[in-house]
Picture 1 (cartoon, rainbow, N blue to C red):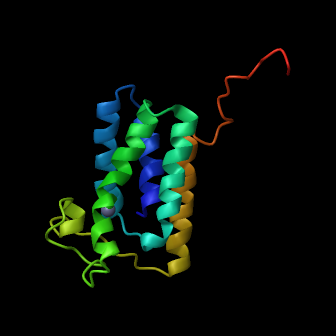
Picture 2 (picture 1 turned 90 degrees about the vertical axis):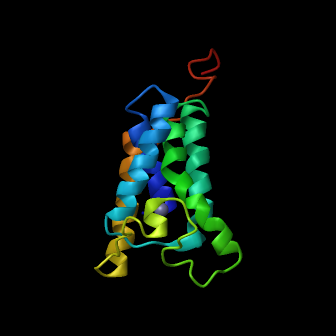
Picture 3 (picture 1 turned 120 degrees about the vertical axis):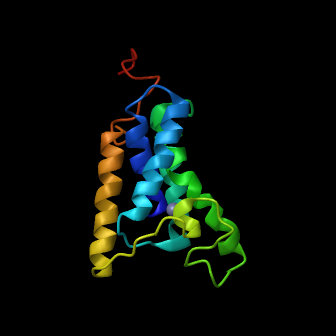
Length: 151
Ligand SMILES: [Zn+2]
């Protein structure tokens, strides 16, 4: 999956526990599954959306929430792609043995999307929305002013 989808799914899985360490570990697990499921990758251009997703999850649930730690666990393996992106390494679109995560170094096969690109993008959008929905990140923002006398 693309990074923002990894973050959204990680947040959803993180919401199943109250333990941040477990949420992070579950997030890592969803990254492995998400990379193996056939998908269309969007590449480094979606980096702002990855960080926006993390900010939104933190804004909704807090930095100490299992949702945030699940999202971080879900997306953090993809941060190891950044050095290769920065130096425009010609091998960066395939497995690179110096990477650590099994789906990034070829230990576990990173599946390719077999259908038209539009369907791949649509699947990512749907999974992104479902992940944010299940993690309750799309709910109205918790506000310290909610229910105040000025309402
Ligand atoms: Zn990955």
